Amino acid sequence: MESATGVGEHNAFIREHICAALAFLGIALDADANTRNAATLSSAHRQVVVAVEPTNEEWADKMEGIGLMPSSTGKPGGSRTGEKMADYAIKGGLFMQATDHCTPGTVSIMGS
Image (cartoon, rainbow, N blue to C red; front, side, top):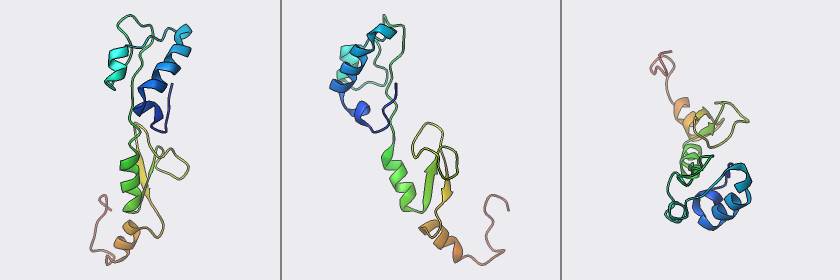
């Protein structure tokens, strides 16, 4: 189960109700862990692990602010947040504006 908006990440009530509805799949929530917003929420007697994975929207916002678009693929169209991320330069963004001021041949980016 995934909630990419941060709702499941920050709301024990919603996690409790979603997991209760999915109990037939072997999901069992540890009420104390859920209340504490622990990283792992499943009970010791579970068949399925329930965990919280932060979406890290703040990081994505900061990357965009400096002119780099976060992307799960490193290309346009990828997810903006996720576990394994890359980025690409936003045309006209701050990063590209800063690199436009470099004189060709004076700066080497990634060994080029």
